[in-house]
Amino acid sequence: MTLFYIIIALSIVGFGSLLGALTLVINQKILSKILLSLVSLAAGTLMGGAFLDLLPEGAARLPVTTLFEVTLASFVCFLLLEKVLHWHHCNEAEDAHKHFGTLNLIGEAVHNFIDGLIVAAAFITSPALGVTISTAVIFHEIPKEIGDVGVFLHAGFGRKKAVLANFGISMIAILGGICGYFLGQSSPLIIAYLLPIAAGGFIYIAAADLIPEVRTDNSRLNIVSSFLLFLLGIGIIYLTRGA
Image 1 (tube, rainbow, N blue to C red):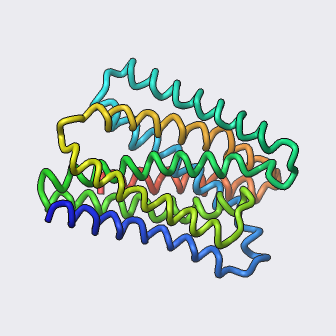
Image 2: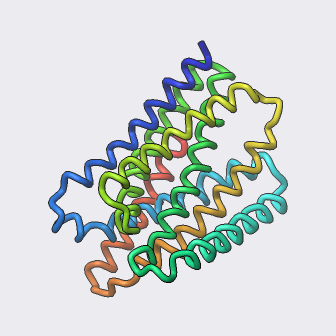
Image 3: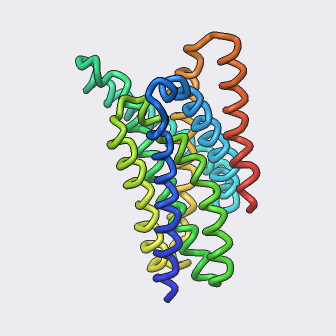
């Protein structure tokens, strides 16, 4: 029954990503005006997730020096991956900005897999703890997933593709949950090292790709609103991390 509870809980988390489809029912003209706002929100949630959630969890499992080394290595690997993707697309103008959308998919896949591992570990400990952690993950994921749809749209994904990609990546949490169930507590280092890897990816995507996109609009109103949304993204993670 524990495995059943894990799969059900993570399925609910995954279907929460469909709330991102709310951005698709907005008039296209209005949607085009809020894309950068959604990118700002996503950047804030990624930075908040890395510094307030992933790294603190990693620090509880790894020596600080190792934690920072793995995070830096992850950052460098994401930089290399972006260069490779950009090199493949540099001759196709319509794909020139899609690489950071692909990077976000990769970072989200790692993050959702880790969510699955964490939820599985909680349910193995006790059903009550599993429910508590699952609730925290749901509140943590929903606002971030909504922002992610905006990121994918801004990266050039079609509306249908953005929703399906977001939903598909979210369901990877189930795979993480199944793996976590069978691994149990016998291989805690796997979770420990995935945390800084995901953190390095999140930091790179937010700092190198999303924030520069937001900075392209220099109007005073948009600068203020984008900054406030960035802070809101961080605040959401801060408020939900201890839920």
